[in-house]
Length: 380
Image 1 (cartoon, rainbow, N blue to C red):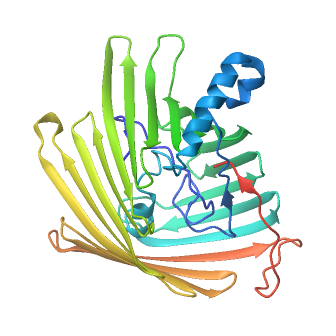
Image 2: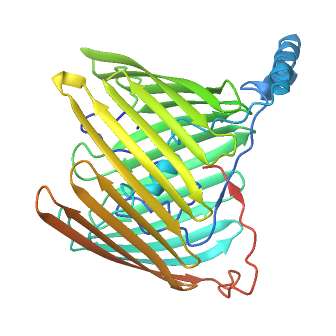
């Protein structure tokens, strides 16, 4: 659960799969038009690329890293994706209402190039919208952009310029006041650790902005510990700092993952994910809030079933909501999505249906009997 400042729209999170299907202004990251492999090139050390320049200092760094490599600790992943398995199982990032349609044309697979037309209408709490999006990806660069009918322009650009190092930029220009933002970010993934620094709306003139840094380290083959620091200055007369901690546990067989995250704002989140069978997984999420005199708690329990041509998710939470979502592929280029949610405490319900249609250029075969070209590992 990432820190979210008041009045600033949350930027989209990175994922292994980038594709159409989501609401404006960003493309959906969980329904790719074709598989996209995320780059996982681990660096030997944060400054290993400077070893030839640093000379003797580089030799000491190399010797230190060799000692760490002897421990053969696994990569803990990143702080941003600490609960990735839980988020892919629960419905919080998938549920929708109304009707939507995604029309995608894949023009190339290596490098990746696709365009998307996304339509949505009939939602209870969102107006009808249209979004045009484009994605380009290669071994070194990843670019994603969108333009919606309200005039909002979004951009996302990543570049992997050294092993383990990925620099990122996300931005939005919106006609509505307070909706525009710019975020600069750098990711580093070592063999047994990861680090991230980011700046949201930084201003070198008056020093305002939000700055976040985190570090996650594997201590054993099953246990990782991390820390996150947040410093924000919304104006010249106000500033705030907070420290948070994160813990991750993975079973020996990697079929169970538990996480705990404590934030300085008085927020705690605990998650558990378990792979019950080859195609069945379950997840639980518990959030506690004690900030500002509040004492709130919310829990959710869900499961996901993967079939040959479909995926089904179901979830129940402590607020009285029962929801489910079915994604089924009727043909290699045609998919349907049905979503439903019933709120027993408020005596309310909502329903959604989605259509996804894909087409391809001459070099992208849609016949399942023809092996597609191998896509590049993009730096996401």
